[in-house]
Length: 342
Ligand code: PEP
Ligand code: MN
Image 1: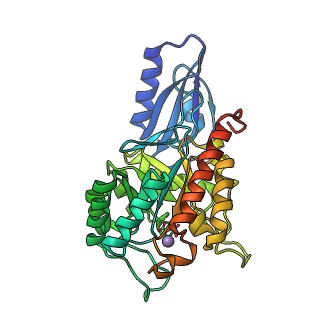
Image 2: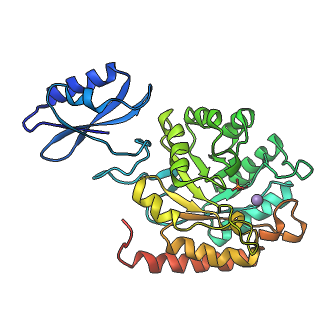
Image 3: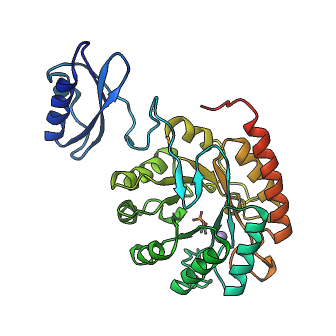
């Protein structure tokens, strides 16, 4: 909701109205609309405020409903998009970021080999699950804390910051201690208590879209994190449930420009989980960058046949190196073109 002030209203009047709104339990902030002062109501603890009452406050000309309940992650006119820094890596800076590594941390040798390989090929962040939210309880669930220690070792050796998933509050405490970025998986996108807790964290967050979540639900999940004080959120499209059997999920690339239109947060794409098929990963990674994604996350394995988890979608070292080179060339080509999506 935007509160448009009358012409000639000064800063003190605006501050007074902000205070009055805050006294009513509304979170409000002044916005600069150039010639005219305005106040944006970003959140309302007790439900939507009454526009009529607000219109009656001194100096207010009009109340404009913005119709979107995610004020903090919403695209801001005149303000730059968010760039999320993970160590030396900037996500959302215009240069696409390649995140890669195995589905799960399995052994020291597997992880260190994978980390060296992806770094050599040009990845900027290392992924690898220590806590795995598996569909079946009878499959490998991850190494837990020892897996996190291995990730920290891999970072020490390669210099790559690590991103890994937290599945609950207990694992979040451990992940915060060892990792550089916390992943919230598709199955936890609407675990609101976990989102609130991660909002108190100082770590950047990779928030994956739930497999049946709408754009609005994804942005509201991000809003939970940001409203608790953590603005460092990167969104991730990883496919939604469709009816086709040719791929595991349907990669919804249209959400990339849709996020650009409605939010200032960076967005990356995970073609590995979206397709569940090694042969489909490269074409969709290319398509993701062409659609304007700020990066892609790719699963790799030194020996996919031996993987304990998601081996069918993991790229082997040669396949990954070839894709990374292609994506670099594509990114250079795209950056030389005029921006078409704003
Ligand atoms: C993952 O990235 O390791 C993962 C489990 O993905 P998703 O939550 O998208 O299924
Ligand atoms: Mn996986």
